[in-house]
Length: 121
Image 1 (cartoon, rainbow, N blue to C red):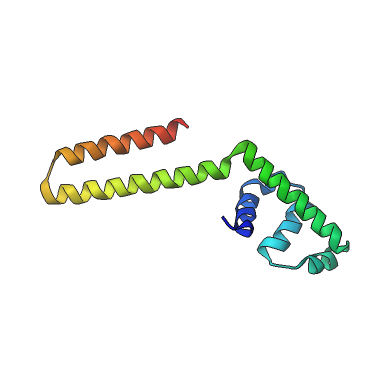
Image 2: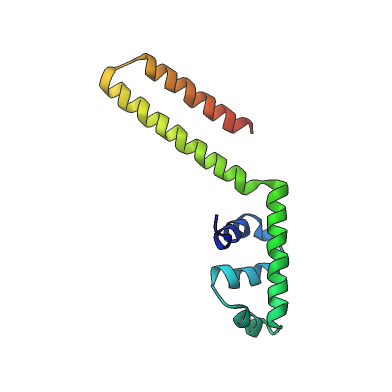
C-alpha cells in the first residue's frame, strides 16, 4: 500500500487515539494535501516542528497497527466476505442450471466454514 494511503487508512482506524493536534496535522497533510509550510503557517509553528509532529504521529499509528492489527483484520474480513459472495453466486448459478447437486452441497459447506472461521477470530 502506498504510504499516503496507508497513513490515511491508519488515521481512520486509530485517529481517535492520537492527540487533537496530531490528528489535525495529519488531516492537514494527508487529507487536505497541505504542505508542511502551509500547515506551519496555519498553526503558528515552524515547518520543522510540523514535520516532527507528523513523523511522531505516523510512528504511533504504525505501532498501533502492529500491536492491534485492526486494519489487517479488516482487510481479511473483506477478503473473506468477497469469497463468501463469490461462493453464493456460484451456488445460485449452479442451482439455476442443474437443480440440487453435489456442487451445491460442497459450496454450501465451504460458505459455512468461511463464515464460521470469520466469526471465531
